[in-house]
Length: 139
Image 1 (cartoon, rainbow, N blue to C red):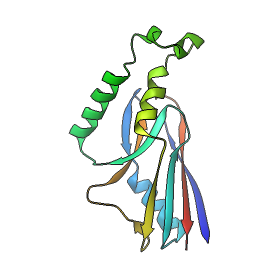
Image 2 (image 1 turned 90 degrees about the horizontal axis):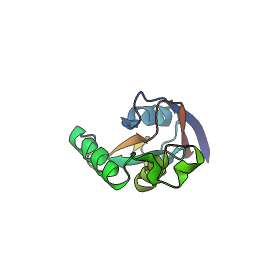
Image 3 (image 1 turned 135 degrees about the horizontal axis):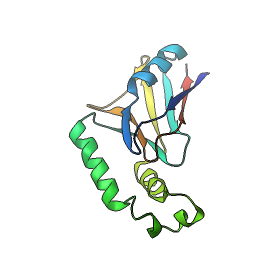
């Protein structure tokens, strides 16, 4: 079995953002030379997410609205976590809803997606550097 480990780095200009990272993942798979295997993509920060869905701007706006309704950023004093001096409790909750990682099969050297599927990095407490792990295993 062969493997490749890559790290992607993000520093979004906004507090919340959705970034299509499928092209970066495809480059890692090509670099790995793995034809049949699995690709794990993992947000390495507790206020960021990796998820799979459609690359459609309206849907991303819907996610943003939905997440803000479920876990609004303000008022920040509504959260126990923020009493520690932080202001990002909402980002922790949003990450929990959107998930930590995805695993996608690699078939014939490519991501084996269903129709419209793409991989996204979800940022909920941005404006600083964060990493995403890409671990590819297979033959």
